Image (tube, rainbow, N blue to C red; front, top):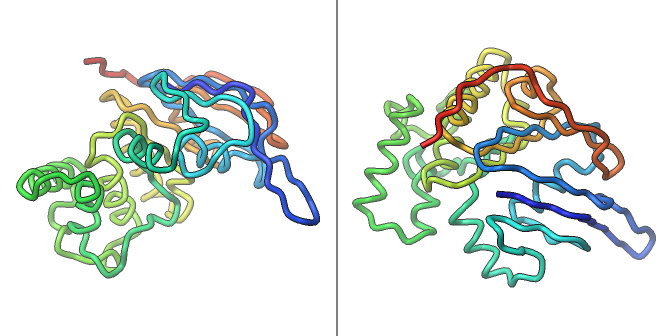
Length: 233
């Protein structure tokens, strides 16, 4: 699903040139749950942004679903992103002025889904994530865990092929954080491909594989022992 070879990313200013990623190579198969860990500034969020087509590479190859991404126009990248990738952020990134329903509906509007179908999809994903009773509320009226569930619902409503999660429990207490990790585990067990960035060893233990980064490079990889029954259909 994801194949990265010798990927580099350089940020340049008039005074300094910083190599955020240095010859990174990585593969993620369909249906995998993979975690990226490392100290702040190691390049993990930069890598996630490139995989999510939010940033360009400086060198190397990135193939998503066998399609080379490097060199595509922004309009082409945006189309691929909307059709294939769902994002879950640490800060939820919900729009305060919109209801939970409207927040979840947004990706469907961007993809020109008809109104009737949008309603069915929003109601179905809200029921799946146990927030149907909160659809008319606004984000600030929700607990942290409920806000993250709404953010996950928004990420999933378009049935993306891959979910990118950037510190999804970072702003949650342990109870709500554990609920979100159990939710991601359930999504993975039902076939979702998930790539998660985290500082938490506990959160990483929910995934199948952990990649450790340092100074813009992959330092090591390890298989995790937690067993999850994955649905393949």
